[in-house]
Image (cartoon, rainbow, N blue to C red; front, side, top):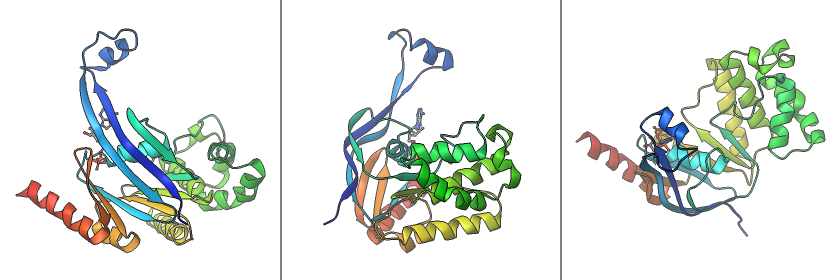
Length: 246
Ligand SMILES: Nc1ncnc2c1ncn2[C@@H]1O[C@H](COP(=O)(O)OP(=O)(O)OP(=O)(O)O)[C@@H](O)[C@H]1O
């Protein structure tokens, strides 16, 4: 029996756009500040079963990242119900959840705990994560002393090594040099070939999506305009791009 791991029921995300930051700040104190509304996600419903690999396509601004942010808990839905059941690893905002004052090693524990692992489980993974990150003795220095590349490496190392049940990958992800990038691709490949790992892949690269996913979701202006077979999804997506160019 398959198990639903992600479910969106009539979900909308509405951002409030204020004239400037001052107005945004004032809006905390009074409801009288005027604003425009932007529906980034517009009444979206879908279910993803355990072990599925799903690609999400859509032009810039279609709402893809907002959906991923809602799944990872970085953003909240304005309306509707969201259920996520399983340990989520998001290869998007790799450094979110790090405390800059803690060392790399302490942050491994912090992120592991936030992902629901027990300290003994994190201890078992600690050396694998440290080795994967390849940041040498900096692992025992505060994260505020890291370069942005080092932070991303540590973020990636933690995210892929905490045995994710739901893996979210944004193709825009760029981590370090070519050899580190290849190691990351290899690791992602290894994870998604494990049974019962669910993959959500946001991309403009239809060929890569075809390689990994059987199902494709196409978004347009915050709505899902297609959700089923990957090949048909790519056709719908290609058509929507061609229309824009025409
Ligand atoms: N924090 C925010 N405040 C206001 N508007 C936002 C915010 N985040 C996103 N939006 C708007 O919501 C819409 C959807 O954005 P989103 O980032 O989800 O699109 P996307 O499909 O991921 O695009 P891309 O392919 O460019 O990453 C866009 O019009 C964007 O400008």
